[in-house]
Image 1 (cartoon, rainbow, N blue to C red):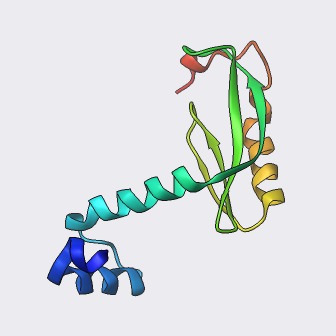
Image 2: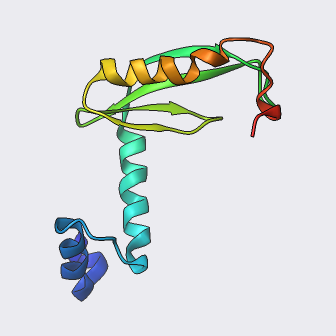
Length: 112
């Protein structure tokens, strides 16, 4: 697939990935595809609700997701907290980060 889609540019991309250098802008579409695949294929292993006032509802879901034994914390309003090698570490980070929002008096629209 890589050779078909990127042709003679494939070795440049592979070299950048293998040597952990910054991927050139011309390959941004490729890295976006990888991230989309990871998010679409991830399994939600745990979740909890936080109470808050936002434009969307009075609660927000915090999810612990996993792909290929890598875990991260996902939340629509606040974004992701990445990356953990253990589910327990991801859950600990989620509770530390979002525990202070378990209060209906907090209005997310007022936060920076």
